[in-house]
Image (cartoon, rainbow, N blue to C red):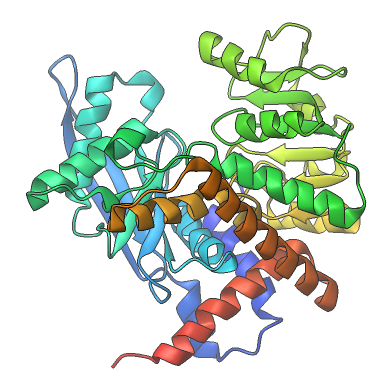
Amino acid sequence: MNKQENPYQMALRQFDEAVKYLKLKRGIIEYLRYPKRELTVNFPVEMDDGSVKIFTGYRVHHNTVLGPTKGGIRYHPGVTLDEVRALAMWMTWKCAVVGLPYGGSKGGVVCDPKKMSGIELENLTRRYTTEISMMIGPESDIPAPDVGTDAQIMAWIMDTYSMHKGYSVPAVVTGKPISIGGSLGRAEATGRGVTIITREACRHLGMPLEGATVVVQGYGKVGAVAAYLLHEQGCKIIAASDSRGCIYGPDGFDARHAKRFKKETGSVVGYPGTETVSQDEFWGLPCDILIPAAMEGQITAENAPKIKAKLIVEGANGPTTPDADEILRERGIPVAPDILANAGGVTVSYFEWVQALQAFFWSEEEIDQRLERIMTKSFAEVWALAQEKEISMRTAALVRAIDRVAEAIYVRGIYP
């Protein structure tokens, strides 16, 4: 990540650009710039060797005007309060742009889950859940998986919260295992949403999807799924990267097989039929579609001039800095923004929450059809606004989202 770029400053710069196109009162603009509430916790966890280690965790609610807040929990050594603030703000806009009745939140613990045992992760998760329990709940704030967390961690959060309540509360988290009230289609949802937005963007830009070359940065829960779903639609996946390195195979490779290879070996590096390339070379690979699906701040003013893609679809949150956005815009490279492109995850999380609340479940086919409808409609709305105002898709998505939240504030009024 570009160390000079603070994620929260990035989010505020994007916000400030978007509100230029809206006639909002200054007080409402100020209100939307700040998180509603923030919690920092420092808590002890007993490790396998009997020692006690202190961890720092965060939970931030950005806005609650449209409904309970929704946002993932991240376990990563680089978690900071400003990163969590930015991600919470982006979640507010993401939920609003696709019309979900949620505000935005985010959580994180500063840790390296790759260096922790299953027991240590469970101890950390249960203690962190207890520390933030006054913030979360099915009517107030519903966590989900993010970088470094998964369905098992959501199960521990749900169980811990339920133990405190004295009865099972499956709707307190989404992205949990099917066996305890998770939703069919949730695991693939973010990657599937990226695929739908890629298809729609290509259609509107007049780019054929069949035979399109794709480069995926971050071959994980989002990137790998988007890769194999696009591969099944006729795209050629020619490059991928993860935290250990980058691979390139100009003739294309089997995206599902590469996902299995990574699971077995720990990395895509060394995948048969590909060569290892440097990070620098990776960003400059000629391709039709580039999908950044790792962390925020990856496409910067330094590497944006090297990018040779015809379309960028953001699978990660905040992968493109505002300076890089400007360069890409000047170069005529359209960007399908994160708050639209990766909203498939929170959309199916919404379906999971609704199913848990009513204890009535839908088939995977029904889930995918509902997701398809919402993503397609949302893209069409953002595209139309971008064309009408002659602004980027990112700014159009933000204008649409901020306008919806602001309207709800005006209707509800300022308390007291």
